[in-house]
Length: 118
Length: 112
Image (tube, rainbow over all chains, first blue to last red; front, side, top):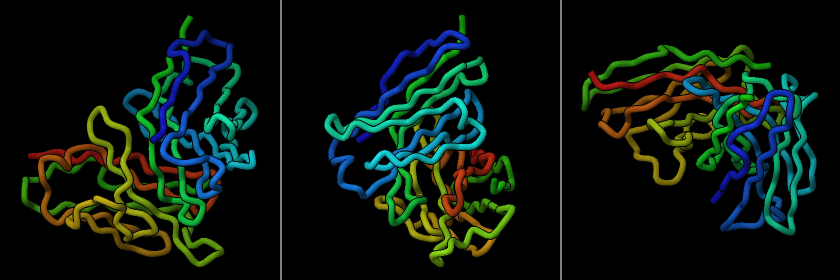
C-alpha cells in the first residue's frame, strides 16, 4: 500500500513537500520504481518523476528545475519537493510504484490534494 | 515527449453493449528491449486510477475478462465486451516506453 501525506495548503512561491509511506513491501527490494504523478482538478494525469531504491531519479523536463525526489529506505518512504509553486501546481498528488521489469504496470496511492493559495 | 491521443473523449454506451477506446501515440512505443509499454487505466469517480491492462494486452490481477487490449506500434485499443454500471469513469492510456511517461487526455465512459 502507498499513502501520501503532507500539507494540504501551500503559499505561492513556497515549496510543496509530500511523503509517501510504503507498506506491505520494502522499497529496498529493488523491484520497483517509485513515482509521483499529479492531477489538477477536473483534468488529466501528469507524470512528475521517478526514483529508484538507490536514489536514481528521472524527472519530467517540464518540472525538472523545481523538483527534487528523495528516498529513505530505513523508513520505507520516499518524498517529493516542488519549489516556487503557483496556482497551476494545485492538484491531487499521487505516489505510485511501477515494476522495474514491467514499467507500465502502475499501482497507485489514494492521493493527497494540495492547494496553492495565499 | 510522446503525445498520446485518445478517441473518443466521451463515450455514451448502453448497459450490456460493447465499448471501444482508441489511443494513438506520436511515435512508436516499441522499446529497445522489444517490449511495448502501453497500459490502460480506469478512474472511477472520486477514486485514484487503477491499472487494467499492461504491455498492450495483459490484464492486471483481478481485472474482469470483459476488458481486453490490442494494438501495436502507435495504435492501440481498449475494448469492453459488455459494459456494466461499475465501468463508468474515465479511461486513460499511458506509455512508459520513453521518459517522460505520458498519458492520453482521458475518455469518459457514461451510460446512455
